[in-house]
Image (cartoon, rainbow, N blue to C red; front, side, top):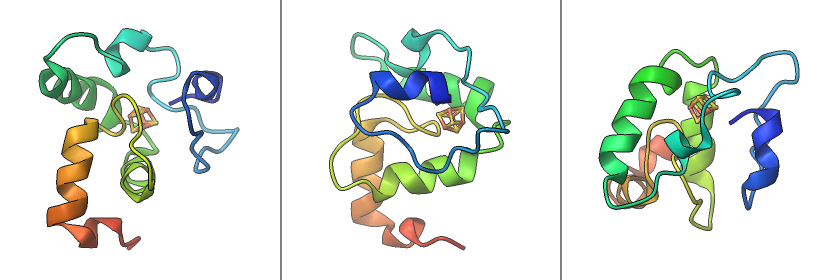
Length: 97
Ligand code: SF4
């Protein structure tokens, strides 16, 4: 998320560079904080539109997976439930290459 968006999250990412804007900087917050039950679809759409082209994609995903408490919202195209699943099944995803 953008530097401007950090304030609405319970934990701010530490990977952001003030000189490089995240692709989601001006995105509608509803894209990353969807209401209702279609979070996986929302995550897939957010990933396609914002996250894959984002310069922080890899760092954002690793950061989100490394958080010890569940983060609210979509990070790097993943939902909270998807991140939980990845932590359990693919612990190597937490390793920075
Ligand atoms: S990867 Fe997605 S959620 Fe993460 S900073 Fe980039 S656009 Fe935002």
